[in-house]
Length: 222
Image (tube, rainbow, N blue to C red; front, side, top):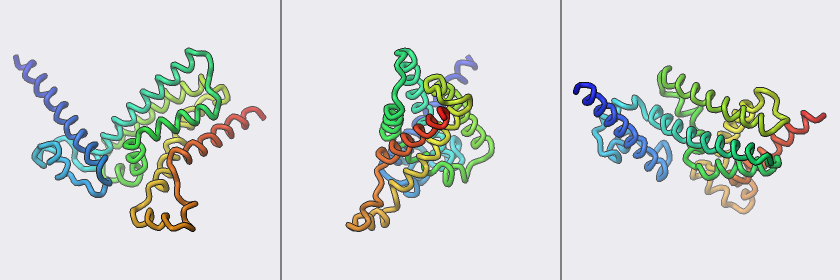
C-alpha cells in the first residue's frame, strides 16, 4: 500500500513538473525571456510561487529543462530522418541535406530561441549537477546523431559527425542573435539604407550550412 502511495506521489510530481514547463513554454511563445518571471510562470501553472522552487531553483534551470525537452524532440526527429534516408539507399545531396536541416530548425523556433541564450544566460545561474546533466545529454545525443551522419555522408571521418552537430549548435546561437535583434535595433533596420543587414534565420542558416558541408566534402576529396 505504501508503494502505491509513493508511486502516485511520484506521478503527481511528474505531472506538476510538466505543467510548469508547459506554462514556461506558453509564456516564452508570447514574450522574451527577460519579460518572464518565476511569479508569472507560477500564475500560469496555477501554483504557489514557493511550489515552483521545489521543482526548479532558478528561472534559468526551468528554461534549460525546457530546452532539454526541445533538443530531445529535435534529435529524435533527425535520427528518424537519417534512419529513413539510410534505408532508402539514396543519400541526399549536400544541398538537400542542408535544406532539410535548416527547415527542421526553422520549424522549431522555441528551441532556436532557447539555444541562442543557452550559453550566455541559461547556463549562468544553475548548479553543477544541472549543468552536468545538460552537457551529458547534449553530448550523448550529438554522439548518436553524429554517428548516423557519418554513416550517411561518407566524407565525414570518425568523430566529424559530432563536430558538425556542434558547429550547427554554434551557428544557431550566432545567426539567431542577428536575426532577432533587440526591438530598437529592429526599428533601425527598417531604414532603407540598412535593410541589407536584415537577416532571415532559415535563409542564412541554410546558406552557411551548405557552404560548411560543401567545404568538408571537398576537403576529403583533395
